[in-house]
Image (cartoon, rainbow over the protein chains, first blue to last red):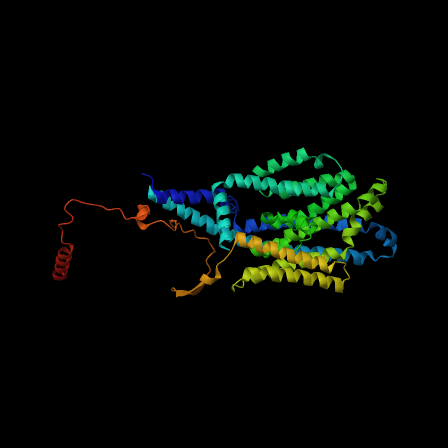
Amino acid sequence: MVDQERVRLMTRLARYENGEGVEDFRIRKYYRSDYTALQLIKTWILTTLGYGLLLGLVIAGNVEFLLDNIDSMNLRVLFSWILIGYIVLIGAYFAAVYISSVIRYNRARRNVKEYLTALERISRMQ
Amino acid sequence: MTTILEFKEKIREVYATYTIYVDIVLKTALTLLCLFWIRGCFPGGGIFSNVFVIIVVSLLCSILPLRVIPITCGAFIIGQAFRMGIDAGIVTAVILIVLLCLFLRFVPDDSLAFIFMPIAMYFGLPALIPISYGLRKTPASFLSIVSGCVVYYTLESLVTGAEALSKLEQTEYVERLTVLLGGIVSDSSIVINILALAGVVIIVYAVRRLGFDFAFEAAIIVGAAVYVFFIRLGNVVVQTTFDTVSTVIGAVAAVLVALILNFFFLSLDYRRTEKVEFEDDEYYYYVKAIPKAYAYKRKLPVYQNDQKASEIPAETDIPQVSLPGVEDIDFEKKLEDSLRVLYFNL
């Protein structure tokens, strides 16, 4: 005889495993500090790349103006502003990514815990 | 109203029955729309304008996850840009990589706005996408909306600069770069549009969460008004050249489309709102439950006016069950006996 309650629970778990669970299991492989650190490193690399390319685009868009006025420019001030912009951008991204990764890790831990509890319930049903 | 609700129910029923097929058809149609729009932006031939290629790619996208559609569109945009020149292709690719690194990677689920936004802006409905995302998603989706806005201006710069680029030699790098990027870097209207779109997403999200009656509808109208306000402010403060009349018409059209979309995705029946208060050991709860609007079809028998009662088919009659010896039982006496036994036992 098919236990309807058990089938219902197993279907729910299977849906979780194939959906949201994929990301949750991946996150739960790490300790929280490791996961957060990994996200911050990824953010640092990609933000630096993005900022560098953005800077390149701005320079390329104003290349004519820069070539004409480069002698009269205070390059030290210019580089200081570029550096300040980079630090502000990285700081903002680090803060946002740190908060979001902690929230995501906690949610994944809670979901996986519920998943394991449901698994235990299924095994007791046998 | 009931007819529209019934129509909505019908659509829901059809979708529930044929989910797999409907998803495939919708994804194909969506990809076709996006790729044909890109094709229309870049006049001329080439493999990325080939109808057969577009159809094959659309069919492929129909069986792949939804996230693949914006990636495909990005690849087509870069491909079309490379046809205009290597520098145009590289600049477009770099812009898309910057958007990916700084914005899109944080909101992979909302990445469709990356291609919906330029299409909506092309048709003069820029407020529609931020309003829709504000209603259904979180404020973080403004990242993908902003990316879509940048893509629109990049395409506009490529299209308007196409003639100037064709006159310049391939070796005139400085002039070509100025044509390609000058429009984007020095144009303050892009900044105003980005601020307006981000403002609309955040305000629509905030208003619809306030929880008063018709909050969703109010959020749509407030979002459109905020967009028009930001654009007018830009015209006054930084002298951008947005046409106020077309902006207002676009905002009104966006409101109408958003109201229709909202009706199909979430129509609530505020007349049947219930407010419940209860408590447990730790909290006191105030719950406001608003039921969704449904069209309940009542299946009543239909009779002709001149039909006599005796001619009405007896389909609603209660079936007569006859058990042997049931007529002889005195149920009243039996009940009295049972109550008496119960009384003395207690």
